[in-house]
Image 1 (cartoon, rainbow, N blue to C red):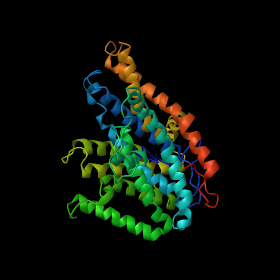
Image 2 (cartoon, helix red, strand yellow):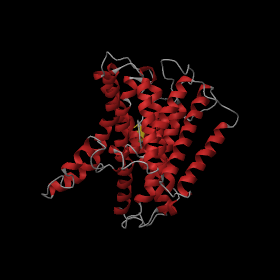
Image 3 (spheres, helix red, strand yellow):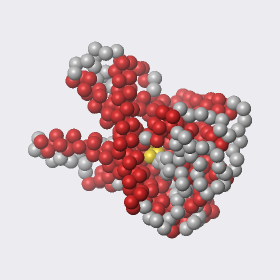
Image 4 (cartoon, rainbow, N blue to C red):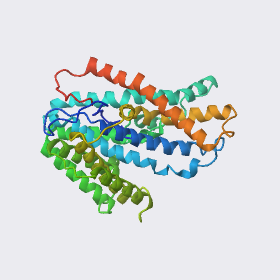
Length: 386
């Protein structure tokens, strides 16, 4: 999910009332409400998929709910990886190639955007388990070994996958991507050359042209999706993207086609070709949304844009809240008395509402507070919320 992904943790480059006006080559990043709406829809796709799968355990439904009709929801994460590259480039475009002096402010903004709310959700998820072990006189974190700490607490991709917060595996990629972006801040042409080499190595690994996998998962197709987002962000800030009649519908059809190819294509689900197709389709969607915003050719429901603003909280905390809702329904003895669709709807609605509150009451205020009090003053940043 990522991220400043969604989801993955992505930078807020939009608001419900943001104006699409502005020069693509200007120093300020215009706010894009349509991007927030797209982020919300991607996060909701992940929520719908996870809800049906969380209902499959024996003391709940015992099978994937609703016939697995939302099993495609993981494509929201692929969209988030492209969105992450797009947003980070779009927002920090004016800082590209300005040297290492830009690193402190940039890295601080990335840190406060990713880690504080992640640690809050991690505590909310791990806390009950640790407390129950303490009360039972057992070792509180016996399931967390020393090798798990870098991946769980620091989201380091070189270690074990994160514990407790299942979706945090995608945040490890986000942290990797954010660190890699420093090369573009240091030297634009040199950074772009390194990014081009990175993309070539990903392709080479996919086709078996390397002696072994790249370290730190640098050869995974998600990395190529991030690079597609970076390329789209550069284009969106430097040229006037084209917009033809019915382009929105055409790009929507392309995205649906990419989802079907990824799910049903000859390589099977989760294969490299499908990931590339999803990455390209997501890039087309983002480019089209930017073009539509600049021409004021799209209107976004305020509620959807607001949900997009807290989509990181939605991505992080939805599994926890869904499990709480399902457990309460089971303990109340009404879980099996309700139609499956009703139980599913209650779980989704409660999770979305709860995550919206977490985002509005914790995530966004904490990010604003940290940036206001401790952001390096010597580093100029774009006006768009990042």
